[in-house]
Length: 245
Image 1 (cartoon, rainbow, N blue to C red):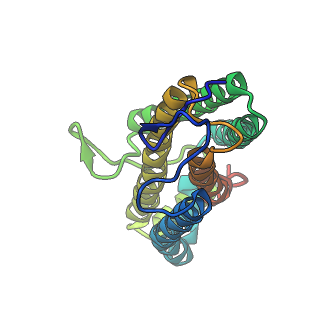
Image 2: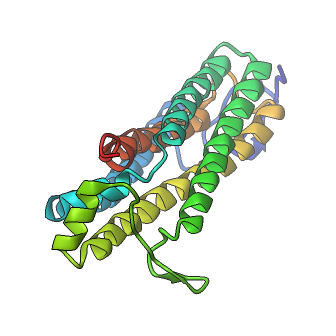
C-alpha cells in the first residue's frame, strides 16, 4: 500500500498519520468526528420521530382507511427492499473490515456492492412509485389526475366508505405520509450513495488503511441508521394491511 497516503488533504513522507491542524492527536480527531456523527444522528432521529408520531396519530384516528390503503402496497417489493438494505449493511461493514486488515481491493469491492445495493433499492422504489401514479393513489391533483381510492372486491372497505363519506380523504392521508416518509428516506439513500462514491475515489487512491479509516466508520453509522429507519417503515406501511385483502 502507498506509504505516503493523503491524510486530510496533506501528504506526509514519514509514513505516519498526522491529525488535521485543529486536533492534537489522531485519537482526538477520531473521537470528535464520532461525537459529531452521533449528534447528527440524534437530530435525524428527532426528524423521523416527528413523521412516525404523525403516522401513529392518524392511524389511530382512521384505522380502517389506513389498513385498506396499506393493503394496496406491494409487500413483495417491500420485502425485497428490506433484504437488499440488510445486505447493504453487511457489505458496508465488510468494507470497514477490509480497511482494518489493509485490504484495499476489498474496500473497493464492498463499497461498490453497497452502492449497487443502494441503487437497487432506489430502482425498486421507482417501480412502486410508478404503480401508485398509475393507480391514481398520489395525493392531490398530479398531472391533472386527481387522487382516487376505491378497492374492488373489498367488502369491508366498501361498507366503511358507505358509512363515512370522508373515507377516501382519510386514505389520502395515508398515501401522503407514505410518499413523505419513503421519499425522505430515499433522499437519505441518495446522499449516502454519493458519499460512498467519494469514499470509493479516496480508497482507490489508498487513503484508508488499518491506521486511518474513520470516514468509512462514520459513513457506516449513517448507512446503518438509514437501513434501520426502513426496518421501521416496512411494517408500518406495508404490513398494516397485508391481511386485509
